[in-house]
Length: 443
Image (tube, rainbow, N blue to C red; front, side, top):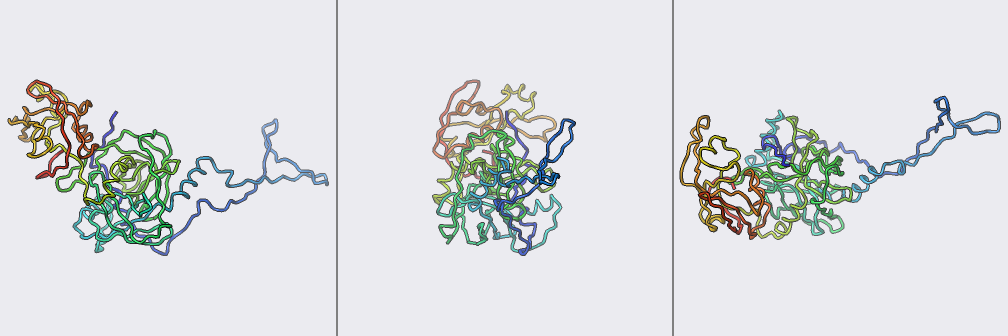
């Protein structure tokens, strides 16, 4: 079962993090581990009549006094609480708080923040240059940090702060905008201060398992929240639309652990203290803060992209593409499909770009133009092009199936497309490559 959400209901969670100012003198440190404390309270016993009475201690004077019972705070903790405390203590030094200065008030991140300010009714302070905050975490001893692309895109200066409150400069090594991921590298951080957080396996998760979110909600750095994994079949548009890029609906981890503006790029951990996801978005319901529905990029996506990000061969990593424009048949009116003898599902090719992987595999776009009919503002589509019905044997029931399948591959991978052309079915092998569209298009 697929669960998709419209793009307009989602917000990148970094954007508001910089909008809530926090006085530098207002800081409270809470030791979650702490020294165990001892409390006393009388224990009770239940009589046959249902009343409770304290146990008596003979004082030798014929009177009885309650015997105090001693409770060790550490022993009184539930197993889950003790586990959460242990995970936080072990991994908190791997978390980093990220502050960025944007190169321009017209940058994508600044514009995103402005849109969210208007949406949530937050006044614009007019401060220049624009500031932003987010979260991240160490992935190796060299000081490499994973965060969200939308945290650092457009930044002219990046500063990270560690749990010991020391600050260091960092620079972007590479970004993967279509996955909303980025790798930054801290400078001059002592080796002893770098504590990588181990990466888990997001394919081994189950709904209901514990999820621990770490980050800096509303600029409150090094905060922790806890919940469960709420859904593993949710798909949301990941990445910001810009230039010729359109967000692609991708599988994410849904959690009810409180994720708020400023948590972007922070880790979502399991009970073993392993990263299972990178916090990226929230469904706000229009209130601009956590509504109990947060999303994280699965850590296996990070693991797949990490070698490319760390290589630094290119600053912006492009996903593979077919180089086509298509119409999702499932979205067309039923009478139109019937009239033009089109199947109910599949990707109907409207354009195949020259020198693209699809062009080299001899895929063909439609050449006619058929009006969609009343109520469609004169829109026309070509109906005689190739129809992609399956990719690697998996049916294309909606257009996002094709996008998700392609973006989940690596450059150089080969895929097998099942095509229908002129009533005939055939299979075509396509080698995926990066491709720059000449204009904004669909994949």
